[in-house]
Length: 174
Image (cartoon, rainbow, N blue to C red; front, side):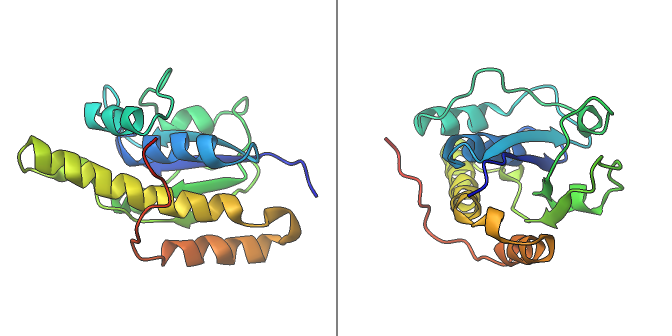
């Protein structure tokens, strides 16, 4: 069994909701096999407060979270990524930086929870729905036997995960 820790970068445009959720979830549920990061093509000024509420209510760590540019991860001194996953269609359609080390890339499209224009309860429900969808994929990702798969098989698994339909979350509030 390999002791490799897989560096994983999650991307969305503002790095304020989906990519932050994915970073925290993979760091929390990755069984020490993953080191997750997040960034955005045009990072917002701060992490969306509803993202922080959802993470807090799930008893997940929020200390040190910030919106950051994907340029931080394209520098020569940045951690070399094994996987880069876009979570929004706009970031997937943009010209990404050249990632050192030729990481495996995939696109897992999720709705933008911040785009919900309903009342505060409807917004919260939308954030919660997207959080549960991301959590479901992260749980599956963290259970993949990556050490036994070659690069092509891993890429196939990542793309198969992109086709997963939203299902009830495997994450429960504590």
